[in-house]
Image (cartoon, rainbow, N blue to C red; front, side, top):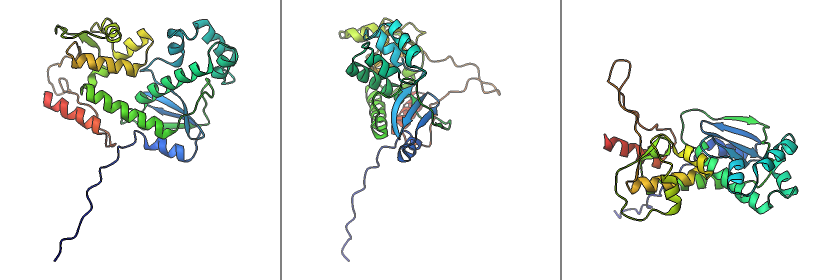
Length: 267
């Protein structure tokens, strides 16, 4: 009997960070998708804004970057916030060029979405009809937001596989500097003091939190910074002294599984 030919296995596609977000896109929903680490705002199934406490908001990015004075921002909020047209007011009043606002808004949106779409055990909630006070700037398709989120996760893992660097306080090491540190990374390194987290440093510098994560993981890979790990207490029946490993969700997140493997190998 002749052997039957079989098709080569097909590589599985990368899992979407949020199947719920895809369903909302399909139904062209308008409202706010609230997750553990941030909120995504949708209009007619597209992402129009995102916020996360892990990253500076568009107000900080605009004012720290010099595109807008602080009093100009608060005037726009006072004049147009109730009508949910702050973005339009900034452009129409001549305070911010339209192109600059779009670029800054997209940067803030992708940055916050990266954190908001992080794996979690907590169910997401969606509030229909909710709109953000910044108003329409430039909507982004859901697939573009999810694709960029996955790309960023993979980039961080390629640089340095320990995700604790992203959330724990960071301390400088005594490792000698073997190569020149780029100026942008030097500014980040100068703020590493054993207490500040990546989010603290992003707020201090008024920069994208994701770009800070990239710099910190590169500094960690170079042996110049390390995460401050909590001291393990004595083991007891109450659960003290247990080692906390990264959470594994039902989403097949390869990057997260890789981090779990690295954590187990480090024990």
